[in-house]
Length: 441
Image 1 (cartoon, rainbow, N blue to C red):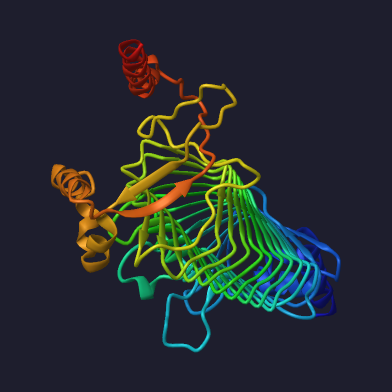
Image 2 (cartoon, rainbow, N blue to C red):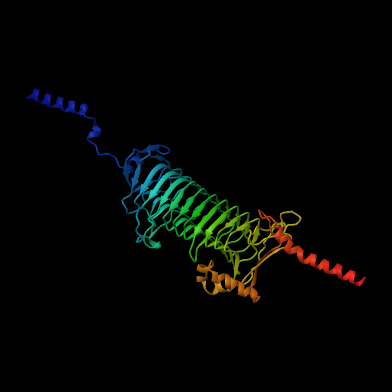
């Protein structure tokens, strides 16, 4: 009997040593792995799918391995970073399946951030209401992030690609966003920098309210209903961006509404219904921009005044500039440098100083028509509009849209035909004068 017990105990010890203990233990889930990772430690994830929803409340690095996928259960945030979890780093992860529910007071996201100084890099996000949501979150760095929204159903059922609410001094760079409600949404968010972001197939590529002193460099907004809508803000820099292919009666490349003292420089506007649309805005500087093949290059409502336009290039737009609601007080040159108006407004430059010898005065009768009926936007290229303009020109019913005192010649070459048209009356006058002098003598 004693020998049997010894034999049984021996066999049990044999199996314990032969078969490691992890064969008998349950595999740890992602939340347990996070909880076991020490502060300032690194958690390396395998090429497999991990279950969300997880909460991070300490500074750690979570790094994927190429095919690492964190998939939520569809009921909340896939990843929530909250205090005291400052300095979290997420890298090389696919994140999906956050809640799409609108029945909660909370707006869910693939990644929601409630703390500061975090780094989100090389993330691919899909199938969530918002992609990344910063709320009261400052000094974060978001780069090389790819967000694809739901892109189906009513606008209210879709979230935003990257959303900043009361979040300051954040860096967004080298990312792309598509098929969301709005690409990037700012609300009371100041001193942020957005650079190298591509946004397409959204309502507004950039939806921006009550946010000051933000900078946007070298971003691309295209194929949205509206490129960027800047509202109730000031001190913004928009430099080197591209706004293109925004079509429809209400479409625009850039809208500046109730926003003042902004700098719009070295941007490209092409194939938009309107390149820039101004409403209730003052003291904005519009410098060195290209307006090419838009229906309307710049649309100014009377409520907008004291803008400065200088060194801009207007080429092949159906209408270069229109003012709606009456004349507005804006400047069309700075330091004796006006704007280029393309071949549709030929210039004479006899002294070859690259500035037209006479001011450009542009008149149109369309403003009142557009003010009364916005469907006119759909027919700007119709022959009927051209006839309407010609009739009003003949009847002297056109209004002054702008006067550029120092128009730039640019690539235009003063044609000899233009020179002869201007010189012929002088030659005829001089000939008649000489003949009369001879007759008297």
